[in-house]
Length: 198
Ligand SMILES: [Zn+2]
Image (cartoon, rainbow, N blue to C red; front, side, top):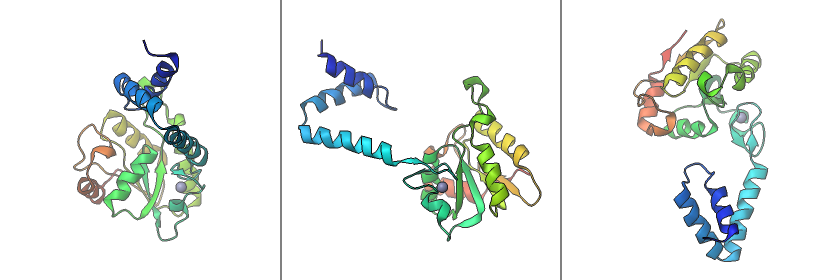
């Protein structure tokens, strides 16, 4: 049996995404034998990152300063807003290299089975932006799974208004997957080949 501090550390690490019980134990055993300064630095970076990072109150991206650099960048096309599920999806779209508009993070997808209702997502925030920003097109860039389909249709209906185009990317994206699985070229084609929903 391992000493209690090690099992406690293992249990805490195992709660992290992508870390199974075996990896958690291996990391814990590594940390308790590492140089104290190295462990100190790791602990400090975790605390610092957590303290300094927040959600942009406009788009929902992870940022140190709200509104974030993307929202305040005058070189970006304010008429175009790409709607994504999670903050990390912004990176996928940015990597594709061609999108020069702004972003909006929903914070999830509608999924009644998991208890995620429209009110749990940042849709009201998007409506607020539609009222105050010169947005002419919303590009819905959600995954191609059932929840992605349902959420896209819901958005198209709820956001429909005169003078606003709502389109959805999808062409060429792997079926039933999210943006993180698409390579840059595929995502680029998906953006170029977006289809108008309404
Ligand atoms: Zn922002």
